Length: 180
Length: 185
Image (cartoon, rainbow over all chains, first blue to last red; front, top):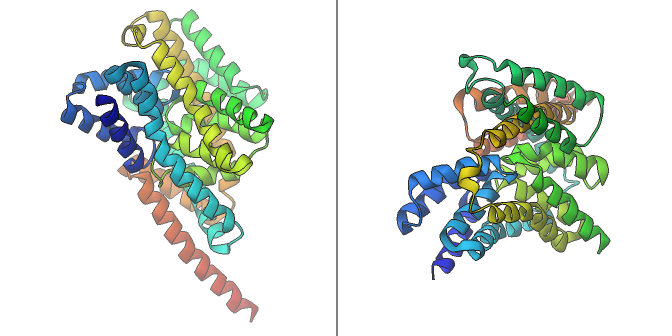
């Protein structure tokens, strides 16, 4: 029974949370409150872990929450329930888009949306900088060790066109050696 | 069949090496989808991100479905999406007993701090590549600056930004076409 409500709740979350992984948070809080599956502090811990483990945060949170409620089946089913609505919606959108890809209106809209994506990405890069290169926020000062590694890696990324995995690996090794 | 396997494999890699939310997958996506397999252009990825901001679900999932659909229709969309979520499921379930404690170890913390610095560097390049495809003239430059400012200073929801930019751009194109048409006559 719990497994069924878990699927239903995550299906609703997938259907109504718009704007990426963290947009699922309010739904996760609501779930905990209504069913008593976990407390707010449990959830806060799960979010922190989901931000660090590999994979998109939204997927990690679903697997983590699902498995904490119903074990391995819970983790798998919660994640699948979360992604089913968006797969359906995107397959429909993709089909429509394919039909109208040559339409002038669609082209015009994307011409204006692409720079908007650049602007929004810039904003999220700033907040990632704040937590990774500065000590929490811009006012509390630069973390010089992190900034040094960042400078070297930026040069590397632009100069040698290697796979991102290489740079992530270098980051991890340097982090461990210099105990970041 | 081979193409489906490649879709799954690439998106599995993208899922396994994305650290953070939606945008953090961009460097991996650029490498695997744009450069290596040429399944989509940077411009299309940018379009998918814009749509993903206004449709339900996680952006990483939406983008995977889009790219997969473009290659192999519905089945491609489903396979690519399963690929991107599988690493999360495996990693979290495998570590479920120790997940709460693992980040208390200083060495694990240090490794992840180093990874987050690497992600910063990779995002700078992703931002640069996106800017090159998105900012083409004065109008698009203004759109980029305004969207960045309202996200940073007013924390405006992405969906409002996307809808507003779509409406304003349609009006702008309508007027500029009129002006050009007028000049021709």
